Image (tube, rainbow, N blue to C red):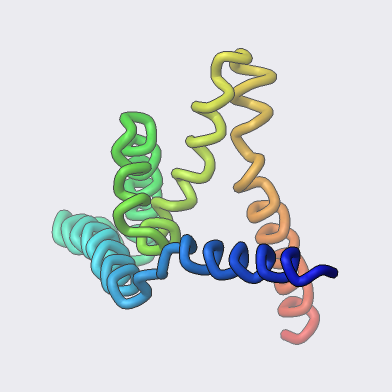
Length: 149
């Protein structure tokens, strides 16, 4: 390589490193913690409320899961969850509402292709593998537990 080419490459590398935005790790971590914690607080509120109304403790978890998935899907449908995700980052992905968002988002994106080939086919593009491996691993653990018992 000629000296001129080396200088150009060196300058390009310098400029490209300079143009890369610096991650705001502390800010992002704090926002993720606060928003993820707030989502969990909402779930805890529903749990306490349902226990207070007299629903048995072993059923409350099911109801809270249903409520939180509904809230996540509703907020995704009206466009609020995407704004929350941009603000909170991983804090909005980890709780169960992030699972609802991962199902509803692709379905909404492909609804123009119809309910069968759009919504139905694309709904589980992200959540499908999670469901398949989750169900498969729970069956395997169940079989192991059955034979060890």
